[in-house]
Amino acid sequence: MTQSRIMMGTVVDMRVYGKSAEKAMEQAYAKIQEIENRMSVNLEGSEISQINKAAGLNPVKVSTETIAVLQKAIEFAQLTNGAFDPTIGPLVSAWGISTDHPRVPTVIEIDYLTDLINWQDVEIKAEENQVSLARPGMAIDLGAIAKGYAADEAVAVLRANGVESAFVNLGGNVYVIGAKPDNSPWRIGIRDPFAQEANSFVGVISATDTSVVTSGTYERYFVKNGVTYHHILDPKTGYPAESDLASVTIISPESIVADAVSTSTFLIGKEAGKALIESLPNVEAVLVDKDRNVWVSSGIRNQFEIAEGFALDETR
Ligand code: AMP
Ligand code: MG
Image (cartoon, rainbow, N blue to C red):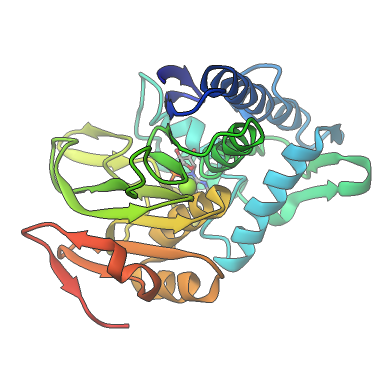
């Protein structure tokens, strides 16, 4: 059974097989809605909005799951020396790249806003479920990690309902349960980041029971005076990150990790990204650099088929 709903600012597709499919899918969508209600920056009353409104004022009590996602985001801020930073909120709002009125902020604005970005100014009191932001104007944005968390939770709900075969896609954040109903592995295409069409691929991954998450500049961007501005921002410069990578795909049974690592790798670039990927357990990757070289991590090479027009980068 197949369904699509708009949630978390994207299209959430589910294809679920088995007797309990309908009930399981309904509960999984409800779980994603609950996560959006807690973690969205775009919803007035969400826990993240409450934290942001109280920046520089008082701590806010939130759910254990919001604390856990925030802690995971901070772990990646540490691992990337602050290239990945969940306090990127003020810059995300200024650029408005995911809105229908994006704009290039002024240099003065950028200068002011970059000073507000610092994950070390997030204080978490885990025992009391409290979060506070040290300075007024600071804001958390979990856009780089929340869809991964939601995928994990939706999959947990499906599995708890006995589902043994499913495909879940939160706007490019994919999770597959088991194999396809005919027992062959799921096949997940990795989009060609240089092509305009969405159905043109760098290659295909064959996978079961894992998540496949891609970060790329083609996902969200706008063009102004012939310059393309994308949505992954460099907290140091305040502008879209200049990466030597065109897209990063991470394969991991933990979608929250895949989501955090994909954005992080894009931000820190190919060499540092490879080192990050190799340092983490159960994390595999397909990196497409700006020269169309495709690097595939050792653990997934025999599950990846490259498309014509791309060169396999054989370096370790
Ligand atoms: P993703 O699509 O998972 O790569 O995440 C991109 C989203 O993460 C953006 O749309 C922003 O909401 C947010 N974001 C942008 N820049 C950063 C950054 N440097 N660190 C953490 N999150 C970011
Ligand atoms: Mg991400």
